Image (tube, rainbow, N blue to C red; front, side, top):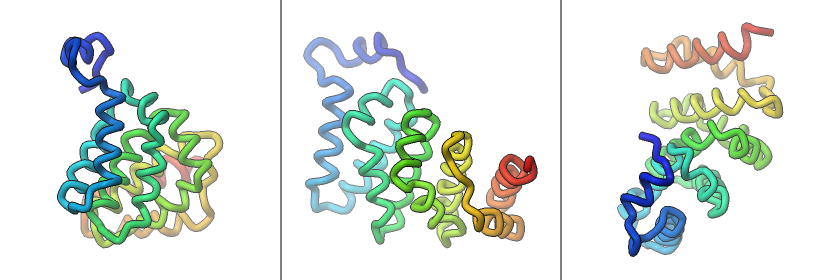
Length: 173
């Protein structure tokens, strides 16, 4: 559910911690902990905060998009899954979308298409779907061939998302 600033202030109270400081603490916790379970939970929480537009400015100020993108080079599938989820959540913000594009995000995210983990694959394709709404995003030549492979996938979710992607971005040429 989306929040308004007055709702957040009411929830936070006068002596409570603000949203910016809370996100900053989560990022600090993620980058300093040695516990895998803590890292996983913290990254999941950060990805969830990326869903609410009220957090977009804080996310930009705290360079959370950079953290999500850097986690795409991680070997751990769960951390990759949460990082892609965070990118998928924030990419609806046009400014964040352009930032992701500028950091070679299309190539990084595309590398997870057809991943053996269906959730990772779906997050990657959904994120790309929203990225290509930008006039600055260039569809890679080989992407159509990759997306066509979704049509033969045993998962109905993969088939459906692949079909919508192809109809939206390749059949309108």
